[in-house]
Image 1 (cartoon, rainbow, N blue to C red):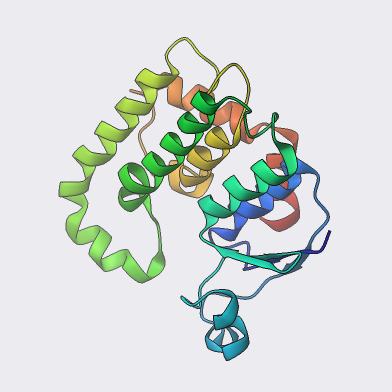
Image 2 (cartoon, rainbow, N blue to C red):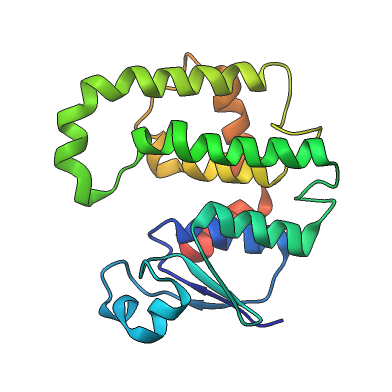
Length: 199
């Protein structure tokens, strides 16, 4: 296997590094930064036409978008483990990953390039964050994980959207199930090892 993960750990690439650690994958890490001109080179644009990170190369196959990469790697390298066998559980993994991308991430992003915009719209985004966290809290009520009875790539993807650097800016006290679940996710050995190595 020849897996390369392109992207600095100070970006959504951290999610991909975490899933690689969960899967025990050997990989080469190319810590290219968000503003690196190399991302707009013809060579990189052949891998990812958006010229963005994270991007992976896996035995000649290139893929971008962090949550899609995580779904791909989990299914390819841990079908039946991090990625469930059952069609219904697979649908739930996709559901939660897409939900996190559409209903949660736009409102909790901490991208420095968007700081002024974030401050300007904060009064309008607070109710959206509250609604998303309430949804997640209801889903986690009396259960440890989002899909089935074990940690899956759904948990990893949603927890990665609620990264510690984002969660520290959120009031999680009204959402105890989310707070407990997030602590469980980031207490996993692979999560701790990834943050220690790349954080």
